[in-house]
Amino acid sequence: MVRPAATSNKSDTEYNPKQLDRPLGQRNPPKAGENSGIDTRTWRQRRDDSVNYDRHLERRSQLTKAVAKPYFREWTNMRYHKGKTFRSNPRLFRADKALYFPNLQGITLAAPRQLHDTTPVLDDKISVVGVFSETWAERQVATFTGEAQNVELHTLLQEEKGVAQKVEINYEPNVMKAGLIRLFMPSLRRRMPKDAHGRYFLVRRGVSDEMRDDVGWINSKVGYVYLVDWECKIRWAGSGRAEAGEKEGLVAGVKKLLEEYRKKPRSEVENSGGDGSSSALHALTEAATGTAIEK
Image 1 (tube, rainbow, N blue to C red):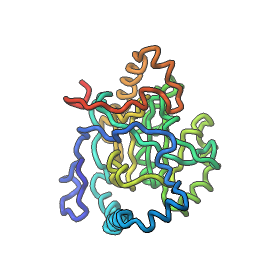
Image 2: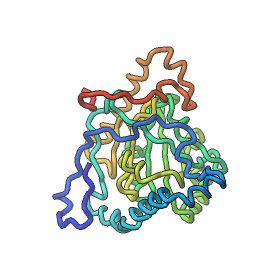
Image 3: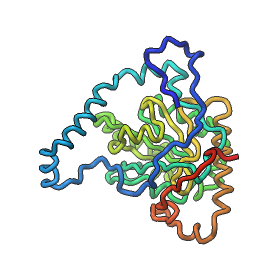
């Protein structure tokens, strides 16, 4: 992937996002409870860390990186193809090469007073996951997954309900903005089908810069779409506004995964309980060679 430089003098037509040619994601399978963003250290552990010189150096490095990142760079990069980071992969990434979508914790429309993990929702399902942080980004995601913009996708999800699903993750680290979103949650609940309420997450914490780099969330002002399989592996990804062929590529990817899902061994299907505990989910990714794109 290529990050568009904020100081570049190239015109919008000269800069072209590259097609995604390598898997996105993390190497270790996700587990419920990870990336909560909550400090679980005891008082004694906090005291020991406060006098640990190495910890101070690590924290200083993190703060330096945060300060060095220009606030307006992401908005400046919106000049280039409306912030599109990469073009989607033309075919699914192979299951043995694909990497994992991380676990996130947040409230849902179904339970706004309690934190929930994304992994149990994604486990043993084929999921079209939209990630956004701004209204602009949400609209970009809708160009891929919106009911009006991608009728074929929604028809397919409706026909395969129980196996295929749409998941939305609204990441908002700002306390005040997150509070405003919570105020509008009753309106969101009225607009969305009841069975989708548990698949709309508002996430405030737990997203590190390393995680964003792993899954390609290069620009927080841009929307991203991931096709995640039943093992929580990212098999396809899109960014920004959908371009010619990308919506069709997403639909084709869902159909391909449905074929693969139905070919799973019967014992594997029965042992997948949808709670993040399936043996396939917790198996480590083995090293492999060759292309990551399916033929």
